[in-house]
Length: 321
Image 1 (cartoon, rainbow, N blue to C red):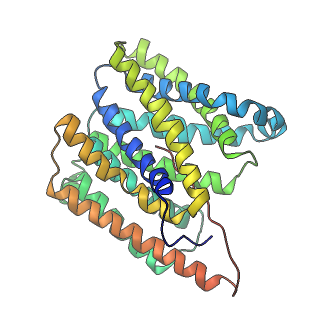
Image 2: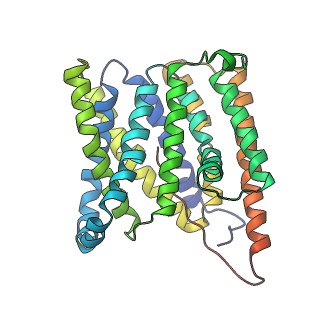
């Protein structure tokens, strides 16, 4: 589907709201340090998000129960990678890094997906994709070393930054699993099934965090409001807007808007946490965004070159944070 020349106000809102809400998710995770344990926050987020979408997915899931039984291992694996691991690691990482660095590292996930496809799954990628990957990886290196690249030699990196690199790698695995093992369920029903498995896997981890590590949640109206935000806004509303935007304009334009998350994170972190924007943040962001831009233009050129005259195609995409 070709992108429209101009975007309507409602489409612009649907494209801009998800990265704003995902940036807010990182800031909220940082604000909740010491008030709610990270795995407890992860569990609450997806448990209440699941409750919110169940009224709209119970009937489709019941009609697709044969698919749920047949592909339960695939759905369990996708729930583990995309819900349990990625999001739980993000909340733990926010105990030792900043929302802006988390958002910047996460923004490079399309490049990690490209590299993983080439290295593990034998996917052929062109010169533009390799160049874009190198630029974005350089940007991530600038961010995690705070502009001191010599730290890479001694691996003197913040624990939270290293955790986010692991989280983005697992997200790339999740993305490839979606592509290689698709389950023919409606989009929201597929997400609900992944949420259910992911939440189930979080339960023993959150229980160990509480009774094994002694991490206690101090329930207050502020904590309850934070849980409501990450469950209903950063999960359900953001996903609904993202899916609707992709349906309108394809996958490539939303991928650019998704990179607004670090910008929103910087503004929110400055306003709510007093965190300042350093020069290395700007340099890293420019390299990451340039890399993604180069990689996406290369992919678009390859699609046009491979497309028969007069043919049209459709794009689809998915992102969660």
